[in-house]
Length: 186
Image (cartoon, rainbow, N blue to C red; front, side):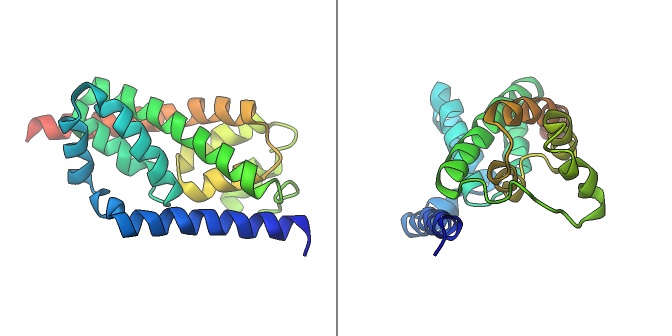
């Protein structure tokens, strides 16, 4: 068995283990909008650290980032929710990158994407990595499969993080503000 298959098997085992532990401990049952909002409010000042941790674990469990962004807007309001969601999303995609790259390696270095709307950005990952990833992030935000795909490609951590911050901030601020304003209107 070659090194890529061993690493991919280890990555699958790790993610399966995280999921199994989440299910066995009941952690995943609390990953609802209401459950996360209550945890954040109950934690007081430490709620932000709890939110970042839940966001990071949630991404590893394949929960899309927009769920947590909306919760931040609902729990903290438009301004603080936007700030919290951008910081938490940045930490979350960094955690995903490090774990996936460490365990899974870079088997997708020479990735060939067949989806028309993704062909251009992915085709230019080598020659224009930051710009390509910003475009990807503007449309696909903090979606776990995107995090994993980019981590297993040949991009550097630095380029990945710059693109994540620039590409995720506008849609996450808009979504968090909308959620926060919507909640305040109720």
